[in-house]
Amino acid sequence: MPGPGTLAPRSPLPSSCRWKLHIIRQLQQRDRRQKALFLDLVEAYHRLLEKSDLLAHITEKLPPEPPSELVHLPSGEEEKARPVLDSAQSPEDLRRKWEEEVDKVKLVCGEMAYQVVEKNMTLSSQDVMLEEQLGRLSALDARVHDLEETRQWLAEQVARQQDRIMEGKEAYDTLWAHTGHQEGALRQLEEEGRELVERLIQVKMQAAEDQNYCNERIERVKQARLSKELKKAMRRTVNISETLDPPNIVEAPAHKEELLEVETCEKRWKRPFRSASATSMTLARCMDVMKGLLDFRKRRGHSVSGTPEARYTSIPVCGVSCLPARAQDIQEAHRSEVNAVCFSSNSSLLATGGADRLIRLWNVVGGRLEADQMLEGAGGSVTSLEFEPSGCYLLAATYNKAAQLWKVGESQSKETLSGHTDKVTAAKFKLTRQQAVTGSRDRTVKEWDLNKVSCSRTIDGVSYCNDVVCGDHLIISGHNDQKIRFWDSRVPRCIQVIPVEGRVTSLSISSDQLHLLSCSRDDALKVIDLRANNIRQVFRADGFKCGSDWTKAVFSPDKNFALAGSADGGLYIWNLDSGKLETSLYGPHSVSINAVAWCCAGTHVVSVDQGKKAVLWS
Image 1 (tube, rainbow, N blue to C red):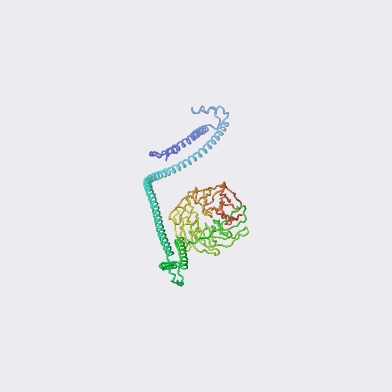
Image 2: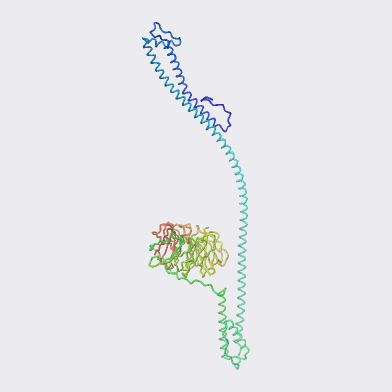
């Protein structure tokens, strides 16, 4: 086995294992340093042993009695022993001194021997540690070898992945270029399609105008002919000898009476002269015929389908809206956040809807909210509410991909308008009876026939629809792509797009249908003139922040103010005439306000928030 200061010869290692040689050199240097420390001790120990042997040898040669002659020491030790012999007076003293010296030497030798033993033990432990270090070094060599193989394998994998990435990038660039060409072709086809649709609409309009012109010409010819015949009938003479039989004809419909009058006139044209009585009868009947013809034309001209569409009676608007100044009543309306609120047309009934899938009706009595009824059956969170203008029905949009219709006074849903594939965010009545419009996050707007409970039209809204409002033939939708789109029920495409600077959260149309109020996530309210289709005013205020994607803002009933709730629980009111903030109210709300409603009488305002509260302001 090699000594502690040397290592067994090893075969030359590769360049990648230079750090191993460095460790071995450090171990060798440490071994040499430790050995150098013990060399002086070993030499001193050897010298002590030699001195002890010399003293023992001298002691054995001393006689038992004092010698008469001096002891002759070896030449090498004579000089060393001379001082001792010279100083000795007697053999006993000399023996005693030598024994003391021997004891001291033995003590020192014992101590040195103990130190040597300790050093040997330390050296043995160092040898054991060296063996352990060599074992660990061998294990680390094996580990390094394994890791080197793993690194090479991973490098190969990385190289292959880089090759695949380069191939994928080239394919992606090719597909991107192809997609660009395809998008260009698609835009060109869309432009061509729009041009064709516009041409088709123009052709249809021209054909309709031509048909109307032909119909008008035919009507004018018929009227001219009838007028001419009537004038001829008035100029004809009547034979006075012929008596007129009293009319005993049974009354017939209006068009048959007209034919009978014309036949009577034709019969009287052949009489030789006329009398005053006959002429007056003829004139009276001619006037009746003309009146019947005019009435018939009116009936034809005012209706395309024969019966005019039934519309809601207009609701009187209050003269002046009262600005709210203080919170008059605070109610915990629902078990979770409240998303929607609206007043009925008579301003005495209030509806609230929340995330707890409930709709609650409240009576406004004496400046307080009194719970009246709870409507159940909503399949999800209620996001929008609207009363029918007559106040008999309530329409709600819910997160269960449907809108539901309730009759006021009944607790269960009357109808369910299902057909959307995602959450329904808005549901509104149209101005014509038994029609509604819904908007959804499935990027569609649907028109509904409530008589048949079926979808009459589906409009592709391109982006998430957050709210809708309806005019006469106009549908306006606010979308998540920061745009407001206008749709005509008679045209199959979007007729106008107005971009805004944030996601549209709500829309409110004025009572005269001339202005539109939008609220968006850029913390601004915008008033849009529907006659010019442009943004007329923009309202902002320090502290006002739109709290969610369904925050609602409304006009006052007299259209003099705009009202919205902020994320900090404040109620902000702007003056449309001055364009400035009129007032801001704080107090009951400590979280974001989701929706507000202003009663049609203009006396009360209700706000609901994410903390279950409904607050009545006056």
